[in-house]
Structure formats: C-alpha cells, structure tokens
Image 1 (cartoon, rainbow, N blue to C red):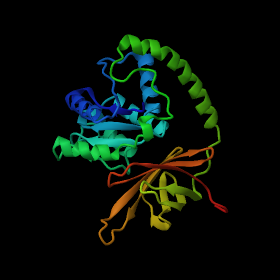
Image 2 (cartoon, rainbow, N blue to C red):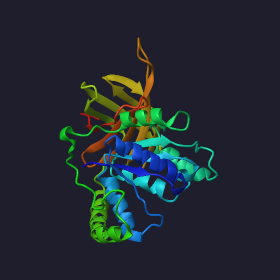
Image 3 (cartoon, helix red, strand yellow):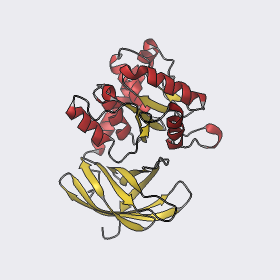
Image 4 (tube, one colour):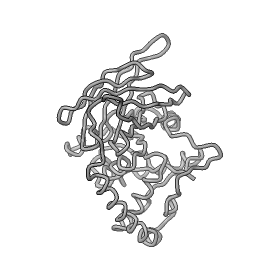
Length: 291
C-alpha cells in the first residue's frame, strides 16, 4: 500500500503524533520515524527509501523544523525523487533565529501553498490537508514498491538489518545519477510544450517560453492554452521553480499556479500545484520544434 512520508522536528512530536493518528484514522498510511537517535548510514538509507516510494512528503513547519538537521535533508530527498511536497504550517517559522536556514527552506518550498494548522482549529486543517493528498488508485493499490521498513513500527535493529541492503542500492543509484549528470540533462532556456491532464479531466497542450539569466527565470507558461507571465522564477542547477498568476472570473477567484521542475534526459519533469489546495499534476515538457 502506498504511504505518505511525514517530516517533522522532534520538538513537534506531540503535534506529529496527533496528525498521524488522525490521518491513519481516515485510511491514510503514514511513514514516520519514531527513533529519538539516528542510526547512522542504515537509518539514513531507510529514510531515503521511504521518501522515494512515498506518494507525497508532508513537512511540518515550525521554528524547530526549519532549523533542524534532518527536515531540510528530507525535503531535498523529496525533490531528488520528484515527490509531491505538502507544507503543513504548525507554527510561524519565518522569524526563526537561523536566517540562512529559513532562506534555504523558503527556496525549497517556493510556489507551494501551505496547509494552515496555526490559524485555524485542527479539524478544518485536517480536512484541507486530506484534499491536498494525491488520490489513491482504484482498489487502494499502487504500482510503487512498498518501503523496506514497515512504517512506524520498525525499531533500530530492524532498520539496521533492512538498511544493509539499502546502502548497496544507494551506492548503485549514486553511480547511475553521477553518469546521468555527466551531460544528459538538456539546456533549460528555450521553448517547451507538454500535454497536461488536469484533475477535473481536461487535457490541454501547454507551452513554456523560458528565458534564463543566471539564476533567474523569466518568460511565460500557458494555462489552458493561454500564456501567463512567470513570476519569482529561479534556477538552481537542474531544478527550476516559478509561479504564474491566474486572474479571477465570474464565480472564480484569482489564484496562482506553482511549478517545480527538474531537467532530465527526456525533457523537464514538472510538478504543478495551485494555491487552492488542488492535488498536484505531473507532466514532462519536451523541446518544441524550433525551440
């Protein structure tokens, strides 16, 4: 069965426990690390495996999590494996003492809408969170493999045993990634297009005109075939993030689409999520003719 991965700081354990209980009570399988002390390489391999096969990564945001050692690393793993990220605002975190850590997490979460538990009761926050989670395939199954460690119940000994094999897999994966990074990723600037199927069943050919200036991204990204100006665009290595504003209409309020992309050998793999709490949409944009 597919699971969501919960990333949180130890100081937020009480809220995390309540959240896990509520989600599991509604049929959501949650992978959450219960060990108070990390178990070295095997423990880290188990975390990486659990993130890589998750349907989404939920991250509890607070001053403690932003400045923790492991939450930013788990966010980086979510980006590496192109897992949807759902930020959960537990406590206001922008004023945390470590300004550099705040900036780093702000970059990792650029363009994503938070599920707010800080300014509303728990139950409305939970309802909003459930709407953001990717839909489970019919029959409750999934094509993804299950993690090597059973969520929530594996002790340190189980992690060490399972992790031994995972370390070997991680070494092999690192070799493959290093080969892939050797020049296979395409140039990002230029014109791209992709068929995108939205959550309400509509499919449109979307076009992206990306203009790169150092670490800044400008240009346009279409929504339902209409070009929209790119805002807050940033490029970091092979990863691109930006958003586009969508104007409101009769009976439809304005909103923003957030894009997170990664250049791959076959194009740019994008994850699109609006700030209304809709489930994320994944697609791959390929170079347009003459682009």
